[in-house]
Length: 429
Image (cartoon, rainbow, N blue to C red; front, side, top):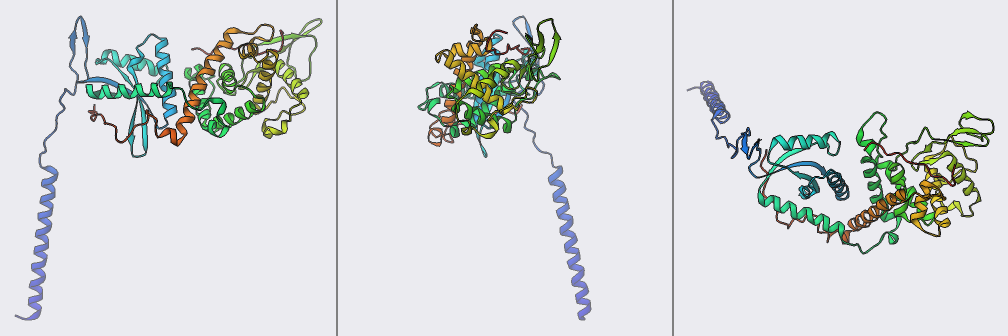
């Protein structure tokens, strides 16, 4: 056999072998893709079957404990703030708050915090309740889940640990914490308070915008600087800010007006009488300081002997006040000066001083003072625990942080109108 014939025959054999291998591979792939596989049917019906329980029609949807995941966070303080807020709103409506749970799970990127509402195992009652919470903007969404009794017990214990962790007294008190320690937690607190303002939740066209993280961080730094400069109790200063405008830069009481003997520079004259004029006295910005009170506060500033060079430049009031163009950062300084003056006037009595911030020195508002105190106590507890949480030494011992050694639960089957605020006055108008 000649060499050329042998070579041609060899090529033909190689081509046949290659074609055979390709045909075999194609058949194998087709068999793999088309071979029937076993379908793992769920242990419960895909479509819920109606039942009669007592005298009521129900539509069960879970073989175990029914729950709805309503929020997920990657920051423990943010999660706990919203957890407490949701429980508070539900308690106000007479709902069972023990059915609201805060849980933590380990993920590849760190702990994830999830809020669940344990619901009735009945779509006819669970869905309307969750839809109502969505409609009131208390939750953004919900995902129905089903737990075993073991899972439920585990999550309930875990949620209880959060209450214990945030309820125990901390070693460091608010007065001993410096601005560096307080700033991150305070910024998160300000964001949360602005997000849960009644006007924001109403989502009307006139609703203010909640603070961004950047805005909250700057405002938190300003509040800390002013509180330190005037030696103010930080918790009560925060209480005033929460009662006034939940830390958002929005003017208020736009129809408020006062009569005075004569108009002054920058006054907005609404009406003139024989011997007096009516001027607009709406409340300005974050701290809701009325125009007339702001003018009085500026006079206090001009007489003040403190060294204002110790304040950052953005917080220093100008020598000349323009009521129609006041920087919101400077309003924080004026608010601190007003509160400091009231504390001095009442000999350090914070309840009378905060009441006078709203009602005036002649008639301090006790209801307003009570509201400020409620926020102050809450802010103190949150900030003390949040700064302890940010401390690595304390963080390692925090029982509310999931541990990789903790027993994991079994896998889940797939399945008010805005309040009206009265302006602060140095004296009766």
